[in-house]
Length: 328
Image (tube, rainbow, N blue to C red; front, side, top):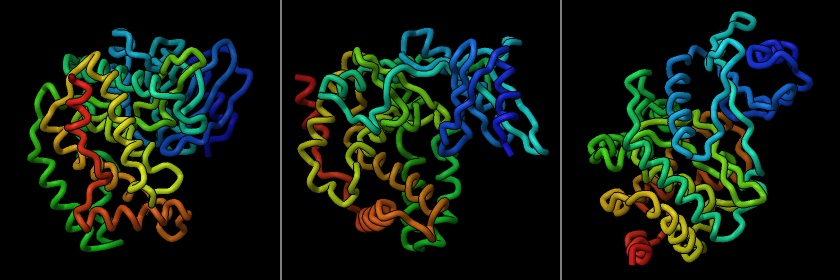
């Protein structure tokens, strides 16, 4: 068990003086805010994940060096970024990161269209740099279809709904044939939802939690960003949010094109990337709480299942038309 005393001992790899350790209740990993000589975020991930974590940190350092506002990794007292530790016979992969400034948009909401523009510009810069990134020095991050939720999805969905499982298998086959151009496919954040970036009082953005970083299509980050915002508190109300989605996309793209161009073929098929997130979230929810779904989760599972089986789009927006408005 990862007790506070054991976490403090692990955290001492990065600082000599620890005054407090706060559990932030991470979803996939154990996440702690450690205070002392410095305040930082400690991530303790179960299992042997040194190579994948090293590749994540290499990408983060590259982005930080090139002025993308990410929360950079912190080196230990021995100038190491990743440790493999054993606690009660279990292996854990440990890394530390600068604490991001500001507050999360999940709880405070987006403060006007200016923040959507900043989100778009930041994603555009990250994707432009990703296209140029060379990872020869470290192990490559996983591919999109190696995402743990997708790997487990076939079995999980088969147990839930065999028709949906068949749809999922056909979808994965389709996506494995989808074009992967250097200009539109590379390392992405992979989990760009509102709880994974902060805005401070001066409207500066800070991105963190690259644990889901993977090789995928750049448009996936945009789709994920919009996906959670539009689902909101009631996943049954998507049909009422068409104008809101158009406005959001317009302002995100207004920022994005300051740094990079969106691939038109990907844009015309953006619903495939909303579907990708549908399958990721469905797999995650059904794995963790299939027999005890919250009201939100139950509504989401029912609506996403109907949407995927019925071949219905996530939201009825002509994204190409909106993008052309941005490019005028």
